[in-house]
Length: 270
Image 1: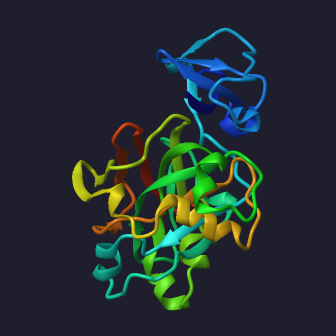
Image 2: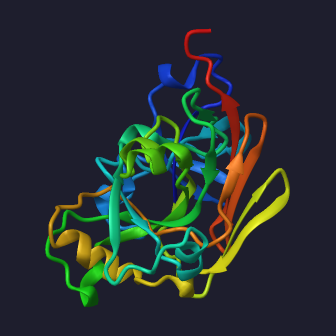
């Protein structure tokens, strides 16, 4: 099952003025549903349709979840750690992005005026489906609703300047996710790619993650409660690099589709 959030693309009013709806993607059409499917936590059981199917060209897809928190893993691919002169961490290196970083497919990523280097970071993302704490690795699959694609956009110069990652990772729009959550997805052995303006920048395999999805879920829930809709970004492979306003970033993962977002200049105060 592929779960989406959407608004009416032809309503003639801004997205933020519309009420986001939940749906299930079936045969290239969006079937609206009564409530967020991750609250039902199933691959169809308890899902109630709220209207007739809508063609994809009638809707605009948003980020497929609205998380209370975004948990991220740093340096979870050995080659990415090495490209910045770092050693692979013996335990998951976790940090948080604010929920206000989250945007959906096609949404603009704003290049902040106070940064001189903004990087793309394509990643596999895990969506939590049940309130959970103290989850054993063997039980991690039971709290996962599904998987999607993410881009952990980073103001690299500010990350280095600050010595910690909150500001460099936390700007509004710095967390594109989507286009949907796949509840039946097998994430093992999948090729992850990120390109900018059609130029391949990153290419790796999810099997090369240092810490597995199950390990990350267990580690995170040892100290925090995760709730339905929360996102875990599982880390980026080597090849991260700068983008500029006017560029388009595309992150693709085999079997999950692709996530495309343009980069635009900060217009604050203009």
